[in-house]
Image (tube, rainbow, N blue to C red; front, side):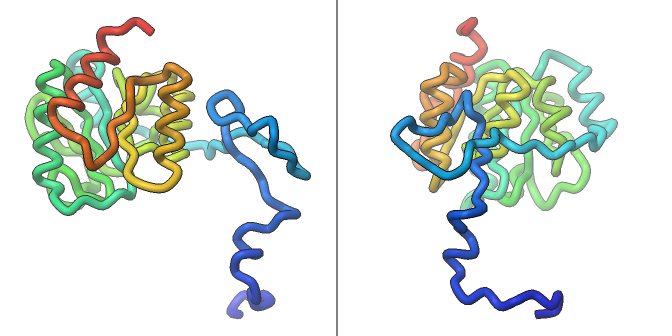
Length: 208
């Protein structure tokens, strides 16, 4: 109303219009099924330019040793972020990897993180960071299976360990696995130090 727009009388038709829908999924990872006939073509995934420079703290951490693993669950919430943070750290250390941990909406690694800060010499907690610049410099990406993060890791050419929480994340996890881009996904409710350690060890030891 404030913008002078007409009222939305049918919210479903407004959100899912059949005449002007765009399918923005990567055709290599998520091709359209052959038995689906639609009046429009798939465009491929859309990538906004994100050239925010990495903070000096992140740059220093990346340069201080071998490429770390990145772990981040984006907008997913967590009832026990402290325990999950400890799980991440334990798994990364068991796999002999340094860790860049995204605080995300769950606030892993402590309270809200605006600037990157160290938990220890081998663990750096970061706030919002450019996946475009960060992902090519990590060993692997552990994430929740969101379409955007999956695509960013794909473009960076890094193996992925997908930990789906809900909705389409399980489908993205299956696509990643079937494409040979990562090990078997780990459903969030089954996530453990042992399972994550095994997945990290797999991506670091298998040439494929």
